[in-house]
Structures are given as structure tokens and as C-alpha cells.
Image (cartoon, rainbow, N blue to C red):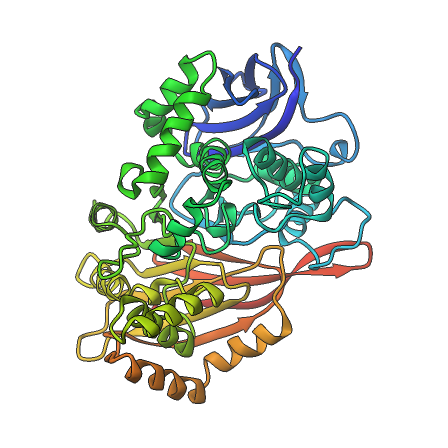
Length: 547
């Protein structure tokens, strides 16, 4: 008799339906049951000996909160009977009604240590959110939680994972204590999502996710030469294919609407095969070989809030002289999603794991490095530029100057005109601190919408004190002057958009929440704090965003 191995995760939710993801420890039929008779069932599919199901729940009523249970082959497997799960409230599906939404977001979550062990990076913001919701089930809660990258760290494993890996293989052989294959990826998800507080949280708050580099490896797709070097190793191909396959199973499937799932030929192929490993591995091989072969980006509409989640890792064009954060088809897709039904939403959210607007010194150094790597200053400078790019992670939007400018123009256009939304927010993480930055466009009328960069990271990680100092300095007038020295050396003019920091930087484990009501929007930042034996979220900042 199959049991529940991981999950359930509540993923897509609209006014009348939802999807619930689960992993079982054998083949079977997974059923979600609600007390009012609604629910859904799905048979499992298999990948590398693991069994998964994505259950579609239908017949829900808008504006209701419906408890649910999970059964496998008729036996109840959720909620769990063992401690501490009986102390949690029932998992629920809360269907929206009306247009007001509360959207929480953040990125970069290293797995919490087992209960009772000291936490080297401080309290986990998701643990703190779970404890708040469990203490007041009828209180304020996010309508959706956006996880903007680095949901697992394939290249920075915990001591416990290192011990587990050492029992499987010789860690003196590459890739050492980093994960090597699909089975080891599943261990990362167990370590991260079996945390009791997080497991319950993910069962009751819908989530949308996108990968960043550490989901595969630090600096993933930094440059063409980086990719060439990685492909020359003995272990990279298995690593990247396993990373993409496990991402599709654990994260990407739940991002899709029921209609998108129905239209997905890969999902059909994986479900129909006795073993879907081959079909999924072929898909991952195509994705790794050709950035244009697969679209990881997606769009979700929450009432009158539109989210366009952009893949800023795997959709890159890396050839020097043609470098772009998004390939042409992906850029056209992004534009089409923003302008489709323009006027039908009041708030536009562009999710990208990497910040668009960075401290000015960092921006100028990244743009300068792109000029060096392109060879404009000769081969010796090009080699230096590539070393700097890899060593200092110089691969954000500003390291792709044409893409930076194209996104600036697109956001200005999206925020202008009679049908413009009230706000255009770029949601990002990656840099292990939080801040708010606001652009302006010299020489042209300001957009009617308020355009902001909202960066929130980490959910559960840390940053060295030296980097805290560096990020603070990076926003200063002196740093801006220093940045212009790099820009002048590279022959770079001023970017077509200016910007200023209007909040932060804030350091610590944290979450941002954007609450919309009509055309108004309020932003809140909260830090996870240790208080006695527990953790809680404490408000650090709250401000109105809409004009």
C-alpha cells in the first residue's frame, strides 16, 4: 500500500479549482477529499523510481475556505497523525472572490536544520510565516507565495546531506559534496520540504516558483565559455539534466493552470508511459542543448493583478556579441503577455530571479565587464573580464546591456497610456538583501504607473558582513562616481533610465508582501526574529506604492 512521501503542496488555485501535488512511495491513486464532497483524483506517474501525482480539485465555490484530506488507494495519508502535525490546523484551499490580493514573495532558502539543532543562518522566514498562520487560521494570509529562485542549493549542501552523499559515492570524485543525479536532487527536496512548519505551510498556501542558479549550480549560464568549460567535465551533463528534470517535477508542473497542463504533451507522455523517465530526460536534453526549445516562463492572473514570471537563467543567449538575457522568442512572449488584454489588470508584476536595478556601482561594473568579455579592449582584457565575471557573479540584467535597456523601455511603455496599470513592480531576489529602487526616464514623460524594483532575499540564508558593507557603499554617491570610471573605460554612455534607492538595504531572513485593493497597493517587509523558543515575523517597513 503506497503512502505519502512528500507533500501535499497546494499549487494553482482559482475561483473554482485547484491543483495539489504529492509524491508517494509507490504507484497508486491519489485523491483529495473535501467535506462538502468536492475533490479530485489522479493516478501517479513514475520518474527514476519515484511516484508523483498532480491532482486537480474541481467544484469549489469562490470566496470559500475548504479543508481537505489526501488519500492514497483509499487510505488517508494527510494530515499526518504523528507529532507535530496534529497541532496544525487543517490544510485548506481558499478560493478567491473579488479582485483584492495579498502576494508574498522572496528567494534563496537554504534548508532549515532538524528541530532542536542550532541554525547557522538564523530563523527561517517560512517557518515564521507558518507559525503565524497556524496560530490564527482565520487571520491575514497570502493568497499566493512567490518563490523567486534557489528553492534548493545543489552546490551548497548541508552537513547532513554531505553525510548522506558519502554513503552513496566517493566524495573525493567530482562533483564532490554537490549533488550529482536525480536521486540526490530528490534528497534536497526532502530536506527542504519535509520541515514540519514548511510542509504544512506549502499544503495550505498556493505557490508559484521559478529557478535561479543554485537550483542547478552557482553562475549557471553565466557565459558561453562557462558552458563550454562545464560541458567538458565528466559530471556536468548528469547534473544539469537531473536539475531540469527535478525542477519540472517538483516546481514547474504546479506553476501551470489546468488548461496549460491539459495542453502539455510532455505531461501526457510522462503520465501515459509506465515509466516517464525517458520522455522527461529527452525533454531536459533538448532544453539544455537549445534555450529556445523550452519555455519555463509563465503567466498567472490573480484578480486584477497580473504576474508574468520570466526565466532569466535558461532563456539566455550567451554568444559574445549577441548576448541577451532572453532569446528573441522569449522577449516577444514577455511583451505579448504584458499587453494582452491591457486595461484588464490594475497591477503588473514581472517576476525575475535577478534584480533589474542594482546599486549603481554594481551596475556599471557589470556593464563594463560585458564590454571586456566581448573583446572590445583586446584578448587580454577579455580574459580578465571573464575571470571577473565568474568570480564576482557579474551576470545580472546589467551584464546584458541591450536586455537591460529593452526591459527599461518595455516597463515604461507598460506603465504609460490611458490603460496603464497603477503599479508596475519588478519582483526579484538573489542578492541576499532587500531594497526598493525606483526608475526615471530622463527626456521623456514619466509613466502614469508607479514603476518599482522590489528585491527580497534571503528567505533563509546569510550574507558576509563584508558584502553588507559593499552593498551599502554601492548605493552611495562616491560609488556612483567610481562606477562612472568603469563605464568610461568601457566606452559606455549613460543608460537610458536612471534610478534611486528609496528603501533599504535591509539584511536578514525576510519576506515582502504586496497587498492590492483596487488600484492601491501597500508593500510590507517583515523579518524573521527569534523570540524565546519560537520565531515570528516582525514588520520592518510598510508603505503605499500606488500614486
